[in-house]
Image (cartoon, rainbow, N blue to C red; front, side, top):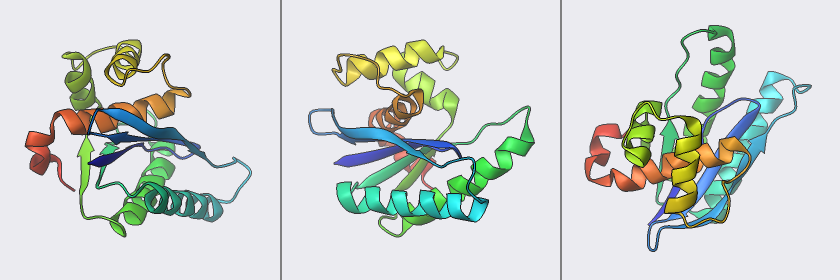
Length: 161
């Protein structure tokens, strides 16, 4: 089974594709949108890039990190808009969409829902047998989302979108 993990964003969207057979990385990276673009163009760029990922890698399931904003709602709005575009693009290719909170992701990878970012990155590197932590951080975060989904697949129905 192939899982696409997504770390939603507006300027930078992390993605990571994991093959569960052998627990190996297929690909990872980021989708970026220039700050100089109008919002409608940025959202279209995100949509098109996500559709391209879905067509190229044909994931069976897609896992998203839930948005969490406790201080700056102003930046939360464009990220939520981008997340909506990501979900819409993925939904065209599969009904198997899932979401996880940052706490659930940290708990699944480290056993500690309050783990530091470096601990999560260390586990991503080790679980996937990589020589280094994936860069940029958004790509490592997306792989963490995919790993969380893979490791908690017995409870997937609880996190279905």
